[in-house]
Length: 281
Image (cartoon, rainbow, N blue to C red; front, side):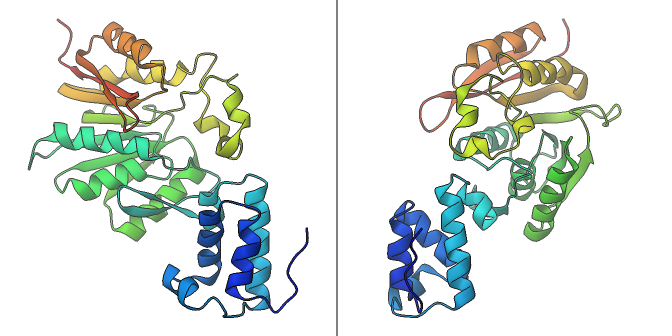
């Protein structure tokens, strides 16, 4: 690949990057390398880059050109108005998942003290956001991946959130503890789905994406086990795939949940389903 000859200024670096990746991404990656606001790129396009900065920028552009997600390249992604650290050990937060946050807040009731459980916390976006948005909530987050928990704990410390983290395969290490609300964004892609070989998904941890032939294995396990972990009147909310709402509502019905419903994301797709546990009749 041909590089502009040094010295290279901001304008030339951006022009080179924009030929290879999305222009907005080229700008974001240069801001990351220079650790500067957008205003500096705009106000000082003639400023030359140091040799290391130019080399680092070229390396990031090449990695992005090869398909590596921008979130991994810069080590962060925004979620619900806050910046979270991410690494290749965790999924990249998606805006669709903010629907889970909105549903939990709506079902908590103002000033009510609740015990919340986040299953498969990953980078911790759900648990941390809920802990910060709900002052009275007692939040526990679990993940089977120790590496993911390290990322989540670092995010909690940086953002000042009080969350209890537990290394656990779903409910396995939680003893007899019960919760008022359980949320989960588990793996829900079919193991043979060709999308796993495309785009950002190629770089994300497969164990956090795929869940059996129909993508329902983990959802089925969570729904079946949740009643024993919910207080009477407690809620379970799970994120799922674009075409899985009917199947998940069926799982909730079979498990004995009441008030079963599905909620649509910003694209109008049924993205979250849930129900209330009222006990066996």
